[in-house]
Image 1 (cartoon, rainbow, N blue to C red):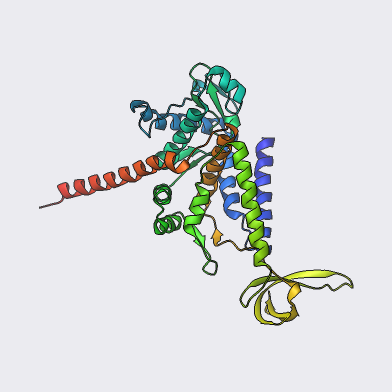
Image 2 (tube, rainbow, N blue to C red):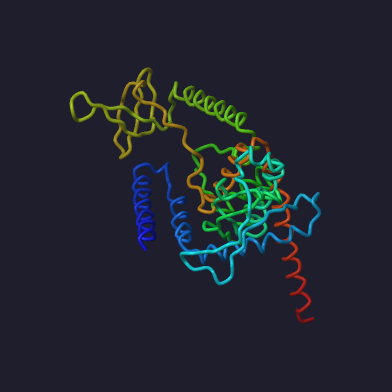
Length: 367
């Protein structure tokens, strides 16, 4: 159909743009994000696929109903159900649930919903999907979540965009979360390697700082905005301080005269030597040039991460959307505290399965 054809063409165009940007700016590689979107977004055009995804997630989340509400693995969410025999690629009929928008604070207060419990239940449901089941909805924005008017429970909607993790990646994500919660820097680095994160060897990397930022607590809107502004101001100050001087080995942007009178151009290079007010730079391509120190500006801080693995794209998207939802609900939440029990459960079950398998092989082995 026309929409599907346009979407596929847009994805091809986006891939072309991404490849061009990567060639021009190797430090700005969008290809992992483009690959992930190109692989998953077309499924949103097929309601049969979405119906199967919805039913699968619903089945996976049912065991929580058997737990005590005080258990950190307990949560209570619900879903509309697909009406059997009323689904096709272009049409899907579901049961109706009367509810209010999850980010309508006045409506939530009017029905007596506990906003803190709502976001906790949603976060636990996603932790179960990601770490335990390895299959999750990758689009938890406020339009895809509502709260039942009578039940006051979160209602999860729209499973057109989903992501399935391999067993190796699911275990690596689980180890990553547990290591971050335990402040185990070596464990964080090993887990990042397990999901395919590539680090540059020439740029310092602080794994603990990355995880502190990545899994930082979500806060009410005003507090979160103030914190973000302070973080951005600090980053600008550090960048400005770093640009005051250049040293041998630094990567710089060099301002040179253009081929047309009165024009200037910028080339990238690396500082070979510093002599008073001048620096000698090896430009991209190998040519050496001596220029005034004022014309050699330290490049923006290079990321220690060479490329984010594909699996991180939607995982990060879920965390960011949940963090935004927490801010909109004007509550606070520790993601490490809420999600770590599910990661621990996943690791425990994996080890138990290995032990059972070894036991079975031992029992069946010839004596």
